[in-house]
Image 1 (tube, rainbow, N blue to C red):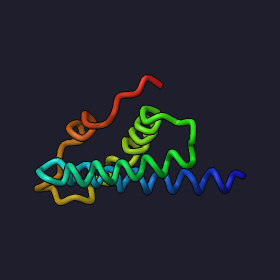
Image 2: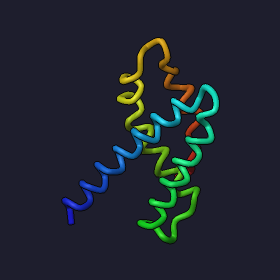
Image 3: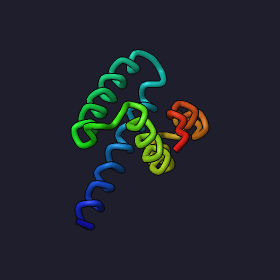
Length: 97
C-alpha cells in the first residue's frame, strides 16, 4: 500500500511538471487551445481515479503539485524565455484547502 502511494505521488509529480511545461509554453500565442485540450484530458484521467471529484478539486491538486515542481521546470528553460516564477504562479488556480 505504501509503495502504491509513493508511485502515485511520483506519477502526479511527473504530470505536474508536464502540465507546467504546457502552461509556460502556452503563454505566447495559439498554444492556449492546445494547452486547454491537454488539461481537459488530464482532468478526465484524474476523474477516473477520483469519480466524485470536482474540477475545482482537480485544479487545487494540480496547483499544489505544479507549485512543488515549479523551480525544476523553470530551470530547464533557456533564461532568455524563462518567465518569472510569480507570473506563472498567478496563472495557477487559488485554493482554500
